[in-house]
Image (tube, rainbow, N blue to C red; front, side):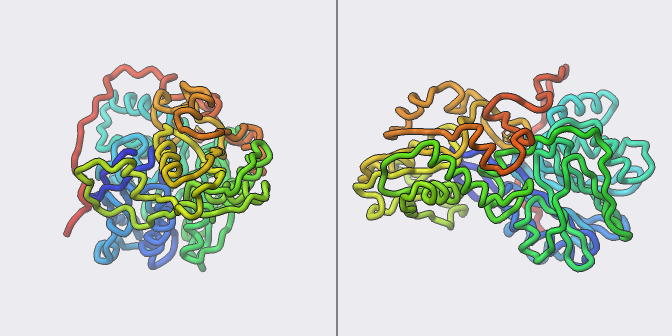
Length: 488
Ligand code: SF4
C-alpha cells in the first residue's frame, strides 16, 4: 500500500491494481460550459484523483483554473465562476509520467503567435522524450514534465493554416496513446490515436456538443450519446457544426483491454460494449475455466463486483458481499503509533465475519499487480475464520509494464513477472489460484480479439516503446513542490 499525497490529504493507494490514468471532457456552445465540465469531471473522477482543471473561452479569450486534488476540492463555486466562456475543456489527472504537482495539472494553457490554446490529454506517448529532446535542441523550453506539453509545442510550431490542420500536423509526429481535446477558444478539436488505446465519446446537449472519455460523464449532464470517436478520427467542433475526418494511415485498432478489466466505470459503454456486461462475462468465463466446490462467491470490492456476479451466475454459487467497504476514505487520517496489522487495507475494507466464518469462499479480483494488498485481504479473511479461499483473477498474469497511460510499476515489481502461479499461490496463502486465460478475456469483450492491446499480459507492444528511441541528454528535470490549489 502506497500513500499518495494529494492536495493535503493522504489517500491510500491500492498497490494491487494499476493506477487509473486520466479523463477528458469538453463542451462547445453552452453558456454554462464550466459547470457542465465540472460535472463531467466529477463523473470521471475514478480516472484520476491527483489534479483537475477547467479551461473555457469565448472568441479566443481563455481563462483557466487548475489545482492539485479532487474535483470538489479544486473547484469551489467562486473559482468555477471565474472560468468563463461557452467553449471549454477539462481534465482529471492521475500522474503516470510527470509528477503530480501543479505545473503538470491539465489542461495545459499557452499563449503563442496565433493566440491562446489549451490541451487536455489522456494516454502516454512513447516518443515524448525523444521529441522533447529534438525540440529542446532547437530552443524549446518546457514548464511541465507531461507529454501534453510536447503536443502543444508541435501545434504551435506547425505551419498549417487552420487550427485543426495544426493539431493534425502535431499528432502525425507523436507515437502512442492519446485521446485529446484541444481548444483555442473558438474551435474544439478532439482526436483519438490511430490505435484507439483510450476511449472518447461525442455527445450532445441541446445545441451544444460534448466530448467525454466515458458515457458516465455524458449521463451526469443528461447529454445524448451521439457516438464513439473512432480510432484515428479527428473531430472539429465549430459554431457551424461538427466535422469529422480520418487523416492518419488506417491501422488495426489496439484498444486497451484493461479499460474493460479495471479502469472504466461499469456504467459506461466503451469500445462498443457495456463495461458492466464485459466484466460479468469475465466472471462467467472464469467460472467455466476454473470451477470449484465452495459455499459463496465474493468480490474484492468495488471494481471486481461485476466479475464476481458473473462467476456466481455461471457457477450457481450464491454471491455475498463479504467485505464491507468504507466509502469515506480520502480525508486526512492519523496513522496509529503502534502497528496495527494491515492498517492500510483495513481502512478501506473489513470482512463481515458472519458471512465468511467457516465458509469455503471463491474470492474474485480483477487483477493482481504486486500481490501485497491481495495478501493482506486474504490474511484478513483467514483471521475472520474462513474455511478455504479459492482466488480467481478476472485477467491473465500481468507480466510487463504499460507504456500507454495505465500506471503499472516497473516489471520487476509485478508479482507475476518473476513468479509462477504456484509461487504466487504460496505467497498469497490461498487454497487455489487461477488467472483467466487470454483467449477467454478476449472472448469476454464481445469484440474482435485482434482489436485489443494486451501488451501487459503478453509483452507484445503494438508500437515502438520508449527504449526504442535513442536519447542523448540526461533528461534531468527540475523539481517543483507547488502542490496547493490556487488560492484567492
Ligand atoms: Fe492497456 Fe495493458 Fe495495453 Fe497498457 S499494456 S494499453 S494496460 S492492455
